[in-house]
Image (cartoon, rainbow, N blue to C red; front, side, top):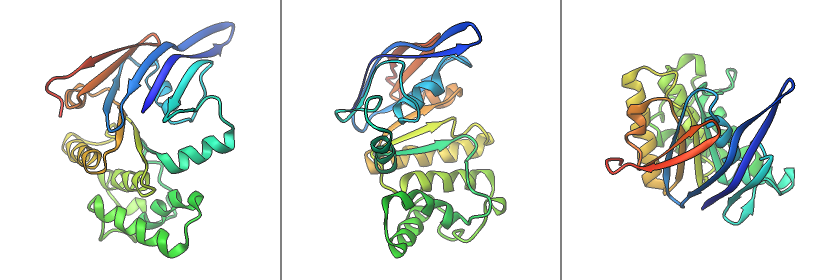
Length: 228
């Protein structure tokens, strides 16, 4: 479970101090699903970075399963990210010179697994996202939707507890967007993941049971009775 208490993140822009997050209090239950929305520059990605331990708050606490992500050492934080948190980004972030299989395997390197186990788990992950026959293809040989599926497989291959997605369908057309979203929702249910997604797409937000709206660093959470 995530428990955020008084989370504030300040940035210095010239002589001006800007609060990207301003005293955010938020609870995300295990297995919960939350969509984060808000205007550009409102703090959406900053909040996701806090949840993923990619940045530390200026003040307040981000606690995941009793561990304050802002207070632990960098080495321990790296371990938490490697073992417990999967990330999916808008730009896919695949290594162009590696095959789909090799890109997925990169997520397992920090776990110290043997080569055979890495290969088997990566192949299984790609199969689970419908790319079992494309393991040897480079990113340039795959469509945008297929590249995002590789990125999703890379996020899930380490069997994380949490999946964080930052505009995962932002570079996709409407049809492919829906396919990828259906895949993410299915994986959330099948794996019991805690799933948090940033999106500007209101159609996708309506599919979520909870929506956190950020404006000027402050968060309002609403329950969506029609969310899946």
